[in-house]
Length: 207
Image 1: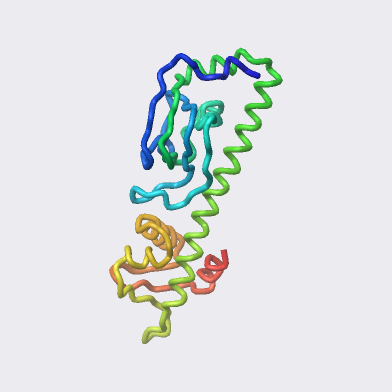
Image 2 (image 1 turned 60 degrees about the vertical axis):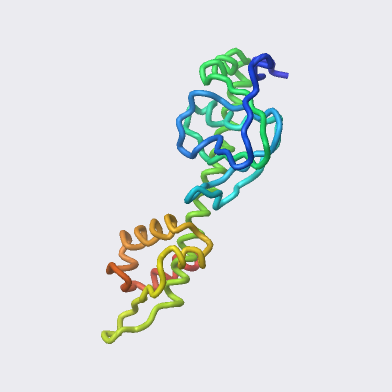
């Protein structure tokens, strides 16, 4: 329908094996990837693994067209689920193809790309909120009153083990604790965390 947006059929296909990382979140694009065949996971990688999968796409499919249209960094990590074949087009060539389309079509595609990105960013934000809620629930469940009557939690296990129990990466667990500390919901360091505002923490736990 729009030949100017088709990848160069004479360009050489690239191949990637299962598990290969094709795009990294916040990567600034200088090319656009067209998935000729195979399946690719879209999501958030942590500690070298796809911790949160937001979707799977199959070729033929433009993998990062929305980011290229908006001239923004890639919004998700992309990992080959199967052996895939790809064609790569320079960002400049892709955008020239867009500019050659009727203005009304350009506006339509831009709005669709913006809507897709907004939905994806919202999904990522909710994943982060879900991690905060799980951490807050865990802290409240393991809290005890100390001699002064205040609530505190003793971390008897390594953070990576606690993170595994919560189904999140250790990096995510540390980030959530840092955010809670910045908001004054936990205090202290080492293996003892004080909970100065348990009622506020309950609100976080409720999601």
